[in-house]
Amino acid sequence: MIIPTYNEADNISRLIADLIRHLENNFKDFEIIVVDDNSPDETWRIVEEESKKDCRVRLIRRINIRGLGSAIVDGLRDSMGDYIIVMDADFQHPPNIVPQLVYKAIETGADIVVASRYAKGGKTEGWSMTRKIISLGALLLAHLLICESRRTKDPISGFFLVKKGLNFSALRGKGCKALLEILVANPRAKVIDLPYTFTRRASGKSKLKFMGIIDYIVQILWLSKFSRFAIVGASGVLVNLGAMALTFKLGAPVDLASISGIETSILWNYVWHEIWTFKYWFKGGLKSILLRYTYYHLSVLVGAFTQYIVMKILYILFFMNPLLAQLAGIVVGLITNYIVSKLIVWPEY
Image (tube, rainbow, N blue to C red; front, top):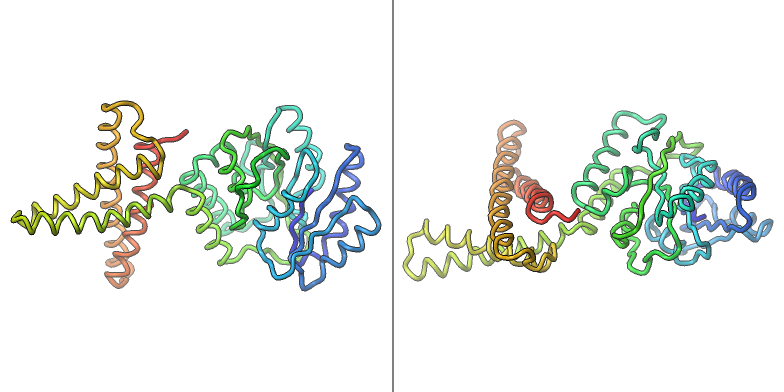
């Protein structure tokens, strides 16, 4: 068991006691690792006392290090069990589900078992409409941008089981959703969902904050191929301007020079997306390559149209500065272009 904690002094003793009871009733050997980021409420001190009473409880106290993702990764790399379960300390992840995760893994031969709120039979309790919208939005974003996440109904779950033999060496521990990074690092792992009810927090305050949402978005963009897609797109701007300048210098009319720049940058981007972003390496023969090139043209048009519509909406309806509206349109257009490219031009799963 790996339990990352920060200011969970009100919950941790009862959680450890509950886990020991459920684990002893089902398994011969187990360990409970609490990874605490030097909590100001001294959660770590309580765990130290618990470890003196039971050697199966261990503490990893991290000084001057913060972060849910990195805490989980540190726990994964330090654990000794064949099956490793990650859960929160606030009782929103019910301890009685823990044995079911192990039995599900043994029964199905799964490498990853996800305690899922969104699988059939799963649900949440006590959530506001805002919390539901944020969670569903995060889920949709993961499924759209990270193909490996589509193997589970709940890739943003913080309650899951993984086998010890999976690839943990590639994990960076950046961001708050460790399961997403594990899924990306292990694209061939067998994933099974176990529905459960996400319950109300026992005590303390929820750690869902605005910066956590930003952190999640950054993590999604990093884990997906979007970062490479954006880098190629940025290089395409320079190619566009360079080709246009060269064509214009050779005597072409400005309109023809502009079209030349656009087409050259589209070809440039397409080649690098084939080789680097999506790693297709021109597979499928000439016909398939030309078909993808045609589809990529269409995805660029969809992105450009989306950019224009977003700019107009923000400018006309919300009176935003036109340059800021254009910038927002560029971002949304780029994301749209990426989604269309992944789903139609270079589908992976």
